Structures are given as C-alpha cells and as structure tokens.
Length: 113
Length: 114
Image 1 (cartoon, rainbow over the protein chains, first blue to last red):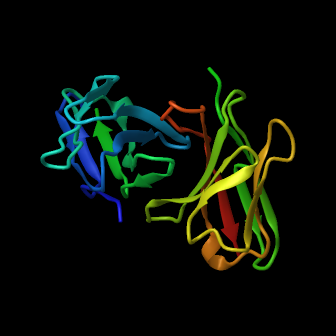
Image 2: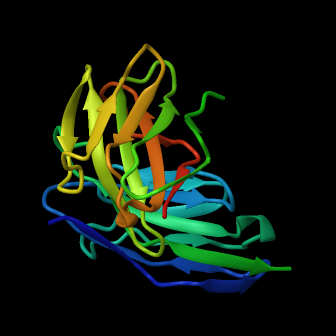
C-alpha cells in the first residue's frame, strides 16, 4: 500500500543554518504531496503542497519539489529561525475518490539561537 | 481566518467508558475527517464523512467507533467502550468540495484512557 518515509529526528540546528528534511514515498498512480507543521501545543497546519511531478511548493521560506523519478519530496529552507522549531510531517493523498492522507512519522526540529 | 476547533483539548476517561470528541469544521466545508496519533507513532486515518454518511473508513474504525453530524456545525467521534490502546491525540479535519485538496486540521484532543 501507499506509504511515506521521513528521516528520523530530532534535528537540531543553529539559527540561520540550512535545513533539509528528507521524505520519500511509495504510491500507485500520481499522488499529491504535502508538508504539514505542528508547532508546540498547536494542531497540524499545512505548510506547502505539490500536486504533480516537478511542481515546487513553497511557503514561509520553505520549499519542496515533487520528484517522481526519485519518489521524493524533501523539505528545505535556506536559513532557519528559532520560530521554525516544530514537528514537520510529510504526507500524501492518492488520486481518486479516496481522500485520506497517508503520513510520515514526523521529524522534530529544534533551532537554537 | 476560519479554523477548525475541537473540544475538549484533553479528555481523561476510565477504560470501558464512552467518550465523545467534538469538532466544529470550517463552515463552508463539506468533507470531514478524523485521524489519530498514538504517541510516537504515525498519524493514522480513521474515517471520512460526506453528505451525512461515511465515505471511507480504515480498519481501525471498528464497531466501537461512530461519527455523527448532529447539527449544521458539529462533527463528533464517539468511542463506545474505550480501551487503553485508544489513548492518542485525535485530530479532526475538514476540506472543501472538489477540487479542493487541502485538509484543515483542528488542534486535536488528547484522549487518555486509564
């Protein structure tokens, strides 16, 4: 079945460091891909998404490119801030009437000043 | 900005008791979902709901679980007889009618079964 694999955390970075969180997927067909973020004490917020191959999703300085050839959707940010400390979840939604999201385990990011 | 709300934020119950988790989806959304996350594990899909009926459910969503939209604003998840392994964070989400893809999530209800 469909699945998402994320790099394990926790990830600890200094402010202004470069961030990469790896995400790969297994799916039939052509899924849509998402990154959600969960700040401490809050719910899951959509960070960015991509719906077809080679699409790049971006938001708040974060980017991820839908790579069908490597079945990946890695999250990147050029310069992280303390306020980016959160748990990041990669997820996919497959095509068709099925609307459920399939999730990765989540990667905890801590950014130190 | 419209948001999904959930109550309570934390529910503690005894094993075997019934619990009802409440959600208020975004008002013009038509699709509703419940997910759960057991501590340290992946977020798991439980059920989706559209047009007053379940459109899909996972194998987790057995006869102990039910969902309801009792009025025009609330969406509830009932667990009839809670087990220890039901302890988890439960997230409600909603999305627009097609072609909307984005599911908007509430802050979650932490359920602790003792």
